[in-house]
Length: 439
Ligand SMILES: *[C@@H]1O[C@H](CO)[C@@H](O)[C@H](O)[C@H]1NC(C)=O
Ligand SMILES: *[C@@H]1O[C@H](CO)[C@@H](O)[C@H](O)[C@H]1NC(C)=O
Image 1 (cartoon, rainbow, N blue to C red):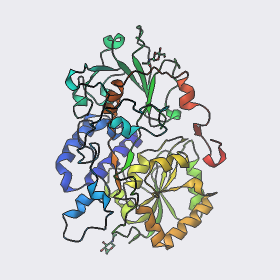
Image 2: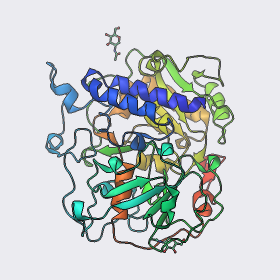
Image 3: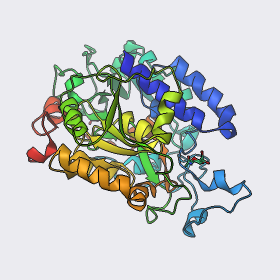
């Protein structure tokens, strides 16, 4: 599948961009990428490795240099880093009696709460291990049999298996993209989890719609939210900071788009073509005239050096569906991403503040083009879209650690009456602009 390969390549490019400082850990990570499938987001791949260093300028990178570091908000250096940040060390300490881990308890994505959760009665090694059965096999997850996956987790008393014999007494059964009934009696305490990587258009309808207790998807209202990336501020009060660099410098070109799948469900090609009538849009890949082989690392350098805008258009308009296209090609580069895919409010909650432009902010491609021309002429305005850089990180959200912690939480029976309706019911996806949809 070519698009997958590209995501991986882009990812590797970003890794390489991290620089010599991290070369050692880098090697370790590259080998992880190789062993495991290219499809899963980093939170699955790098389970036992440290998270990636931040792609943005950070205090660390600047402090060793002779020139004066950029001005920083005072609180920043005092912030103790939680364990899931790069170089973070602070582990959760306080056991919680009433955690807000589930969607009905907290309207956020609860990722930080889950990462920092310690069950009240948790006794470390004296706590029995929870057995998690990966029903479609462990290879699919790039994980190995046993408890190794959980070694770095604050709550680590869990073990993974793909032995279906354990179906009757495992504490949890997780299904990846496909569901088959184990055919044995289940205890009322056993948790069945449905994981979807892709959006509803590219996932199958589930035959038994009322058997799942938890969901694990990129959707924000999943029990275990598994986004493609998760932006986290070091200090939630500090969302912008001065930048030393002029992001408009030397750029002579306007809009770039890398695309290989021309027939998407949201009319993105038609939109891009309409936009191209009003501003220069260079389309690379099978749907346009320009070629830039994915194997060529330099290909993506043009996004930093030559272009001002990048079309981070997803192939589907579905709630919360924001993929690496945005995070890696867009925010991972020194270019301003223009987004289409999830609803504007979804991007607002997930992306760093003021880091992108959503197509729905404009009534038409022509109006968007007018604004882009304005940005092209006004360097200060253009640069204002980069002030988020350095204020946080895309953290590893340690999917397995969170799952383990949640299995140790007090049991609160729940299940989905109709998981298909939740996943693909009315209003979840649209083939048109969100501007025309009541949500
Ligand atoms: C712009 O080009 C000049 C001259 O080649 C170079 O010194 C400078 O570093 C470039 N600026 C950026 C931001 O790339
Ligand atoms: C899981 O869901 C089933 C019904 O689908 C229910 O009988 C069971 O009590 C639930 N278990 C938990 C732990 O929520």
